[in-house]
Image (cartoon, rainbow, N blue to C red; front, side):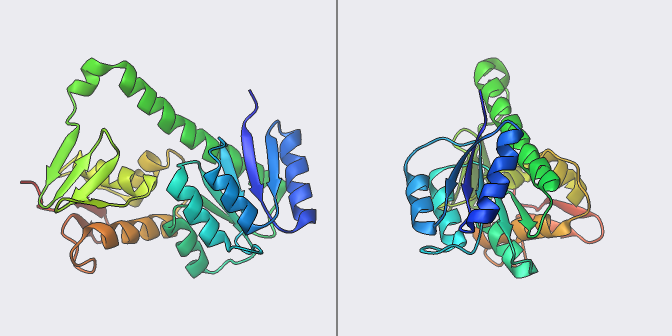
Length: 244
């Protein structure tokens, strides 16, 4: 069965070039050319294996579209944009994108990024399926991890702070779960990237920094003085002294 890619790009020449290349690589590609149509697709319930998203769209911005996609689905999103500032990358990743590629890019690099993002999503889904098929093994694990003022629910992939839901992206939850399930263990940025993104780490600290900052903004009382996830300068991160 072909993997489906939703391509959201207003430049028809770029869209045609990307679509043609991905079709040759074996993907089924659906093209959308403006933000309003992209948001309708996000709410339609159609299933895709990956979304390729340009940030500069007519009608609705790419950031708005990204938030609509994330509100409805955990499908991997790869941003492709001429905006190459750290701020734009941080915003895109912070709003739930899985990867970011700057125009102009080579088709070979784009195809490699697409394949990697779909592969990572497949690993996550396979892990969830294995957990469902192994109730005995799952029962041995704590399904709810209580921390001081914060509850991490492994069944529902959710977190609550003082009884109120904390809205986390998939990657933010996976980072929180990693530390909550392994108190006392220190993780380097390379280890976090390898375990959460399930891919090789090439030293791009920006991805880890953005997700860690966004997570802390959501769970910490004072993100500048974090209690739940502590920084060990020059080493990595560990769960703070927050066990009940």
